[in-house]
Image 1 (cartoon, protein in one colour):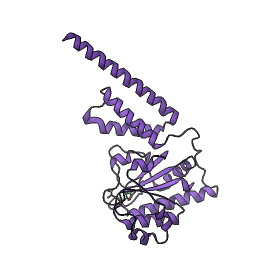
Image 2: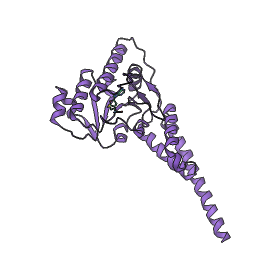
Image 3: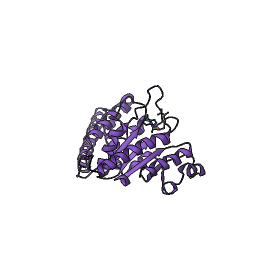
Image 4: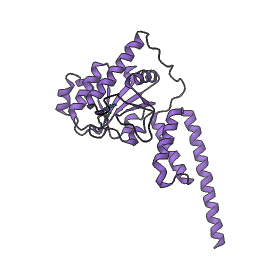
Length: 256
Ligand code: SAH
């Protein structure tokens, strides 16, 4: 189960934090590290702080975007100390750990951490199903990146130990054909294009409406077949809009 969980670090500035994250992961039995455009990697400083978790660094997958990092995942969890305007369902690390383990029984999961200086952007959080907030001192809420990974990795281990001892019943994983984040992103692109085409989205309101639609579909979590049905509806809607557009054009051409 722990093998299906990837820890994703976005644009990490200090390579020492990558090493500290690798150490935190290995001590808790996690092994999949994904780095989105790290500033400096590979780096001696990362290996120094990894303190023996060198294999995790050597096997770390380095990618260019968060989309790429989570493409094969069916459940994505973001971490942030800050609650956003269009906020996701918010959970603490303990509640989140058992949910992640339940999901990990059915496929790949990503747990995403932000940059040291400014965390995760709103757009990045909108790629997630859940936001985890470590309930820190509200007057000083931001943990060091390595420490944040450690807290989450510890809770995942505790939940996993409880599962192996039969003390924590996990939610039954959804058995039907789960959609990957790549499928879901393609659906959002199609939805956006169609909503612009039919004139529903005006420039000023794009961002908020799309964030709310993403949150709604993230709550529903359509499977692959359901996504295909939705995309079929979008394609037909697009065709109707095109026909109406052409009819309007030829009508105005006849008038002139
Ligand atoms: N200044 C940044 C914090 C960056 S700390 C901000 O305002 O968002 C680096 C990363 O550690 C964060 O992006 C997040 O992934 C994690 N983190 C730090 N404190 C956290 C907290 N209290 N709850 C959840 N994640 C936290």
